[in-house]
Image (cartoon, rainbow, N blue to C red; front, side, top):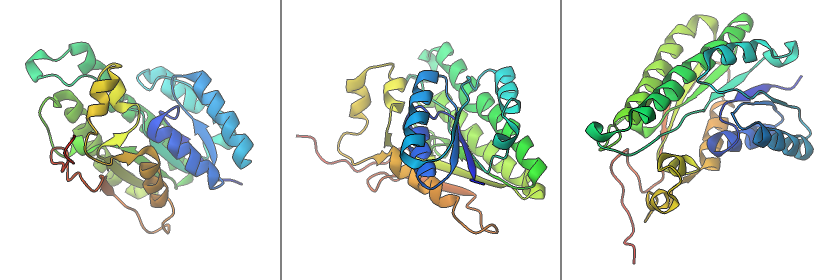
Length: 255
């Protein structure tokens, strides 16, 4: 039977790129996100191109009841999840602490921390029954180093880093791998969402550098799942060559 990967936030960015690489390598894929139409379109495309099976599981990770009910509703064969890519997350705003929009803060905490934890626990409960599985948690360089006007986004990603470490410890007795992946600057819809549709400002984030692509990150995630059963990459920071961390870049002069 084919191995199964579940991907949250699969309709775009890292999640969609992960769906592509796992499907192309023979995995059956559970696709989660809020945009059901995008998920269904992606599912049809993957099945046609890679001759694998897809399952669309739309829900908002912020909705605790929906998360657990949706995962429990999976047909028996689909509950044998080998890999969870816990990817759903977002940044909203780039404001100074005292000026930040509290609605933005609440959405980031509800999505990046609470929703992240809900999904991980719901799927971990299935993996524990089989004493096997691999949970891959998408963090950020923002969870390793705080930068100006990053405030609550950085805080949420620090929480992801802490939860990743906690899962790694707690899952040891169940033979479950846990890996944290922390990308730097990468071209996805991320910046457009952060700057609330202001594409010019979003694009300026990447001025003078050759940033990561979603495929770059997906390739690294897939690699982490190909290692022998006794080998686990616990934590991995991934940046483009011109970025050292959350603050330091070397940019070409813009003429």
